[in-house]
Each structure stands twice: as structure tokens, then as C-alpha cells.
Image 1 (cartoon, rainbow, N blue to C red):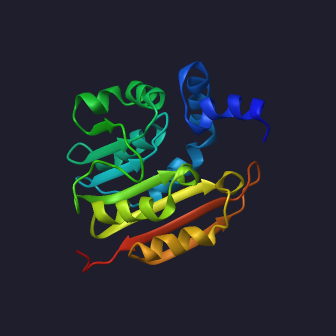
Image 2: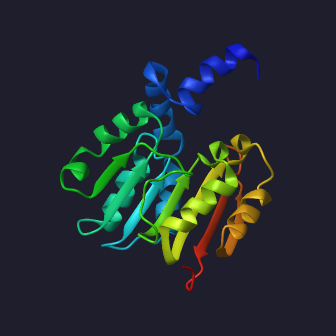
Length: 202
């Protein structure tokens, strides 16, 4: 990728900021909607559960998760982009007011969540930005024993063999890890991974 393209793409999608970041956020909201629905549905979120959404972007998945766990549950969204946090705050204004959604600056590697405090962790189209061992280790740390992990990413942006995701998840202590490559008509395949933190893990 040449330098000019990087200068255009990075502030829109890689590290969203400014006007390009907001434009990228609108495109993400549309382009990632199907994966957001898949992730929340596959996570089998229940009322009252505590959920982490990593790299929440413009907040589509946050809103879906809040609807699934509210009004007694809680959804924490972490994203390093101030632009994305603002867009998510606009989309989830009511859920933030009633305390169902909380937004923080953070990443997969540094979520700011307490150890063993969450039931489900969800990631849609941001694992390509992680330091894999650190990101999976942090999610294993913050999930309760038996907690669920749901991750999906466009194959064309992953930048590594999908099998590396399975290996990193298992090395971090996740069990029952399932990796799937789901073909799609209008986009590259969706790489999908699910797993559980070991029930007897500390």
C-alpha cells in the first residue's frame, strides 16, 4: 500500500479520527452490521449479563448488546479512537443515560476491566490491530470462568492466517475454540471464532 493510500485509509478505518474518521464510521456501521448481529446473536447474551465490546467503532454492536442484556445488564465498550467513542455515544445516548452502556478509551490489550468481571467479550473487525498474545490474554483475564468469547473479522483485512487466531486463543487459556470461515456474496469470507474461558480457571 503506497503512502498516499495509507494516509487516506488509516484516519478513516485504521485509527479513525477527524472528518475521515466519521466518514469511515458511517461506512463501518453499514458494512459491519451483519457481523455485529452475528456476534451478538452467537454470544447468546442474556438479561443481566456483563458484556465487553472491544473496538466498538460507531456503536452498532453496543446498541444490539445493550438491548439483549438490558435493563439489568451492563455493556462496556472500549475503543482507542475518540471519534468512534463520540459516534457510539450519539448512537447509544439513551443507553448511556440509563446506565446500560459505558464507553472507555481502551484496546483489547488494555480494557480497564476488573479480573473475572465479565460474562461475554465481543470483537468485530478489529483483531487485525491487536498484539494477539496480549489481546487474548487480557480477554481471558477479564472474563469469568466459563465466559464466552465471540470474534469476527473480514478475511481480507486480517493480514495473517486465520489459524493464528485459534492458536493465540488456546494459548491464552480458551477452551472449545471453534474457527470458521464463512463465505459471503458481497464481501470476503468472514473469519469467525468462538471460545470459552475454562470453567475452573482462576
